[in-house]
Image: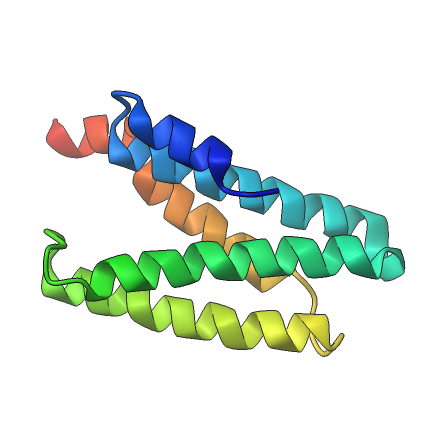
Length: 123
């Protein structure tokens, strides 16, 4: 699958955080489905891991751009997480670790991106 769905969503008047939340939800569900099926379908596992790594790489590239308005410390943290995700992805692909850490990281990021979290923070 290409990122056509992501690009289509980006062209809507959707808040960027909501778009990122939906994208993280998509790749996280994909990782969870692979975890539940076990390692029997190596292509499905490789596809899910690659997609998750590409999402994180895109986040890191965006954070590295001079036009990114996020605070510098947050940008650095996201870049560091992206590097960790890449290493953890390689380990998972080699069968050295399970998918739980990647799923947990994605879920934590989703909690921060969730619209309810934004509303609560504004209160």
